[in-house]
Length: 325
Image 1 (cartoon, rainbow, N blue to C red):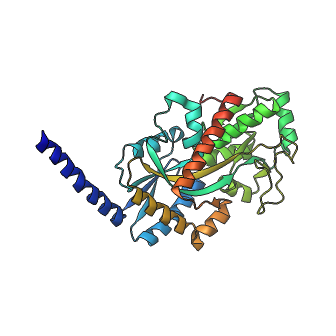
Image 2 (cartoon, rainbow, N blue to C red):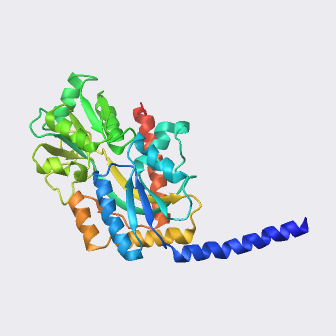
Image 3 (cartoon, rainbow, N blue to C red):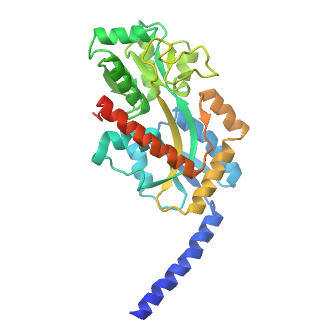
């Protein structure tokens, strides 16, 4: 028995230096970032720019693999079971980490805390009420009035069930005493086409995802879900300023996660690389284009953001009665 115990101690002592050496040499091969969005979605496009920058910083190729669908469950499930070595990373938003646990409860096929460790934040962004440029809802009061006059008939879109756009609309319904129809979309571009054509009344959207049809003059932003206007878009009022409920904040962030058990030194390397990439001219320019705000924080600070959002969204889900259906 003693010989067996000595053997275990010897194995553990050998594993320690091996893990340390692995962490010090990271990355020594291709790093893959799995994204729960379509290839043309603004977050995925932005991540490609960050990946290119990381490839230069690390001297190793970093690729982005889009895996959209099922509210992100497909992408998350793939990385959840990957080796905890830093070479298979996952991009997740506050929806996947903070909203889904409150929305799905025990039915959620992953645990964002037990299954993953936060490595770095990519960006933070606000959502806007978006309508057709030629449609009947040119103001927030007009949209609310139509919803009140037609209970259960006005439709709003979202990128998926449990997305910030879904929860933001549920909060707007709650605060205005209205009831509308939720239409989730796997492909955001189709959602904006339907808004522009008048088939969908409105949606909460980010500037980056709505930009192509905004530039085409087919859809417009009539209010921002924030406590104050953006300096870059001073003509777009807050929802409260526009005649809707005040204090309605609809926002999102996207960050990088690794499977739980990934060595701390590897996490530090990933964090330092992403934060350095966020400061490069190419990435800063794309942040500006999409209306994103870079969020270079430590893994510890990122974990604090997650905990705060989990509490916040649990309260919203309970208050509004939002469901995954």
